Length: 299
Image (cartoon, rainbow, N blue to C red; front, side):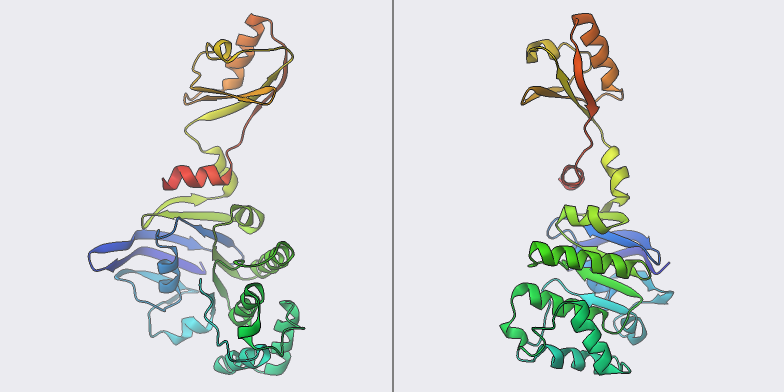
């Protein structure tokens, strides 16, 4: 495994910010690391990168144990922090060359030029970072995270402040990087997770509450919702008589019918419609959105 987190704890005083979490990420996998504000995402990422120590537990990156003094693991990790700290008085090219010298990159000028082209910074390369928009600052942050060609990329809110066109470009870049490297990213944008992540880890109140593919999490639910449309007018008072119904909601000329029972609600609706001599035009199970899954798991 490229990333392996085992029984990780982080305390601030008596408060546990991270409480006994374990998960792993393999090479070539892009994992979304999700959670509400204050759930422990950024704390976990800072421990993974060696910026802060864990209270207990272990993290291994490409087989090497991470700790605050481990320079070897830092050389194989690319990290974009949430607040993207940059030297605002430096010029874009100057800053990337500065970062490259820290990593002792060979053919530095060529590598910097490659990063500038990859991140679409050609017109901004001779500007001071402080004069850039938030979106372009984010691009500079991504450039410094990947300039040394790391094995593992840890991104905290990588698309923050980007416009829709930039979002698409950065997502494609992350997907391309994820084909050969390990990527773990934190974001609040669920469409982003569905677009680029192979798997999702959700943390809430310092604990892992989900670890699976988005499609599986969307199907794992304590209730079932069915969308149904009839060819004639039907009232809520009639539909509520269907066995095992928990909730009925009108949607335009159709209905959303919900049950908490472990049954296929479509069968119940079909049998009831046949009895009432209703013709069904549409009948389908409504898949839970990722936003709904997130809310259910973190409330």
